[in-house]
Length: 218
Image 1 (cartoon, rainbow, N blue to C red):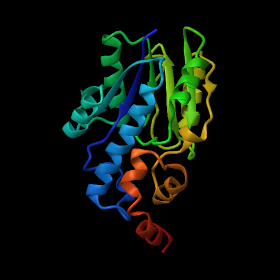
Image 2: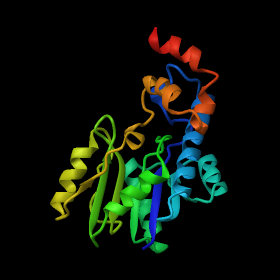
Image 3: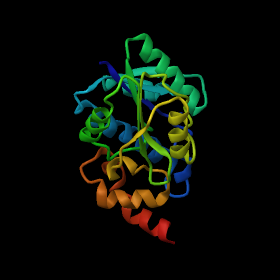
C-alpha cells in the first residue's frame, strides 16, 4: 500500500503573516522552513509512508523539499484546497493508494503519530482525522486519495467529519497533543519554549524568545 504524505506551504513572503507583529519577515521565512524540516524528519521515521510531496508556489520551498528527499509540486497560487487537490492528483499518477494531508506548521509531530494514524485505517475506504487545538484539521488520511472533498480552512474539523459521513465513510479520530499543536498565533511561539527543545523550529527561535515574551505579553 503506497501511502503519500502531502504538505502545502505558502509562498515564503506570505507565510505566517499572523506572526508579523512579533517576527520580522526573514525570521518568518526561516521559521517556515524549520517547521518543514522537523516535519520531514518525523515523516522519515514513519515506515508506512512511501513518499512525501510538498506543494508550493515558492521555488525556495520546492528546492528545500527536493533537497530533503521530498517531491516538489509547483502550484500557481491556488487556494489551499486547490493546491492539495493538485498534489493528490500528482501522487495518484505516481501510484499513491492513500494520502495523509498535513499542514506545514506541525513542528512537534512525531513518526509515531503518523504510524498511529495510518494504523487506524483498516478498510479499503477509510478516513482518519486529527483536529487542531482550534478545531481545524491538522491531519487528514484518505483511502482512496480522492475519497471525499476537502474543506480545509478555519474550523474545518467538523466539516471534514460531515463530509466523510456524506460519502458513506465512518471517520476515525486521532487525538494527540503533538499533532494538535500548530504555530498560528504569537502565543504559540512561547509554547515552543516549553515543548520544542530539540527541534529545528526551536533553534530558529531560541535566541529571540526573551524579546518575544516581552512583545507578546505587553
